[in-house]
Length: 173
Ligand code: XMP
Image 1 (cartoon, helix red, strand yellow):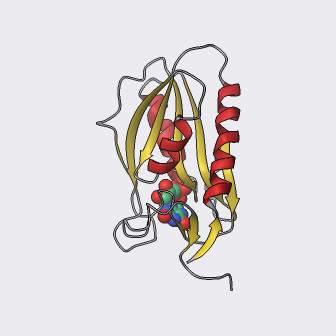
Image 2 (cartoon, rainbow, N blue to C red):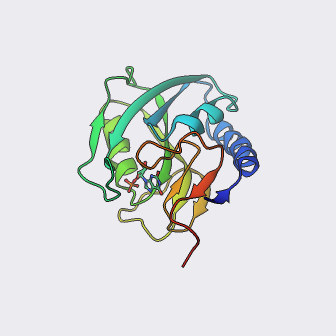
Image 3 (cartoon, protein in one colour):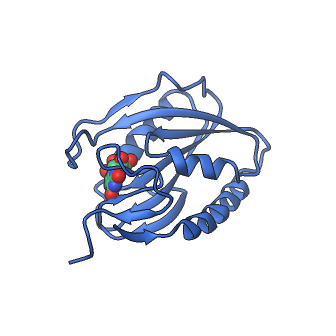
């Protein structure tokens, strides 16, 4: 598998993202970091340990890529694991921004649940794929339009454990 982003590059970028996030909150109140399962897993675990803020941790699920399919179906949001976020600062984390539909929908959902503010952070943002306008507050890396795995990202639930971001579909044509 071709390595697109090495583990060292990720570590270094996450340090800087954590500093950017720390600088974006000023009122000393806790931030509820909400990860979108399952892709957020590794990114969130690494990032929250570097954020110098009082942090609460929570999860939500939003699935559109299912089984073998790589084309998005209907987005299903489940929030049984979400605590009461009314009046809270929420930092939403996802592994990758592709069309933008997931984050747009989940941000609306969190505001609907009463969050006072919702900022969004993604490890990766694919260029040339966005279908709905959405600008994450924090972006780790901008990547080309390739199917990537590792560091939480999967294909059929495999490869999530890889410490780097790899390209599954081979070298660029
Ligand atoms: P949207 O299109 O809503 O999609 O921004 C975000 C979700 O799509 C999945 N996704 C990928 N997963 N490698 C993956 O493992 C990829 O290259 C990829 N592109 C999109 C992912 O679940 C993300 O949360």
